[in-house]
Image 1 (cartoon, helix red, strand yellow):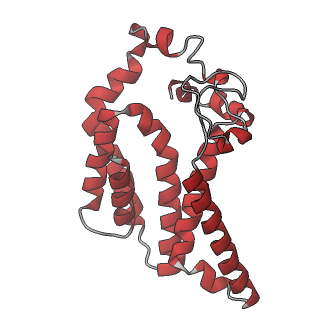
Image 2 (cartoon, helix red, strand yellow):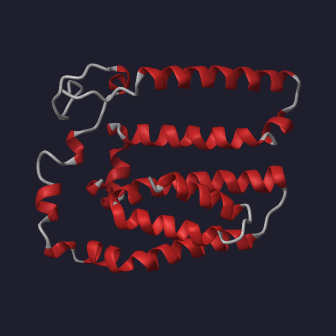
Length: 213
């Protein structure tokens, strides 16, 4: 439940709204204290949204100050400070626990749970678990409603882009504020889906912390 607040106050901080960096820090610290695995998964999403918002403000609004980036970074550092009593021992002292024996044993090894693209469109639920291969007894379907919404949004966006190209109005398309939100949302959709596929196993191996997620 803290994820929307983190994104919201990150955007407000980049827009120069006073005190937003403080609420951003508190929201981020709250997420760290409640579920550090979600923090790991949410970090790339936060970076993508912040980068797209930064580009929108710089290109569209042309109202940019580097202090806002410093405020955002400062909010992140404050969040680490507020949750340090939990985060630092959780990561630095996990060698004294049995977490690796339980989380990284045979069944929970992430290499056994990569998906196939066709599983995104399979909504058959057999009330079982996940395993190696495409025949899991659990559904990884994206949802009929979500797929319909995605298809409709993609079609409407393609029509709008095509019209702007025909009018030779690419500049207006770039300066349209919703373009940046659509780009951010698209990237944040594609990257997590790609990370569920075995093609990205090299990335998983490069970031050892991901194995806990």
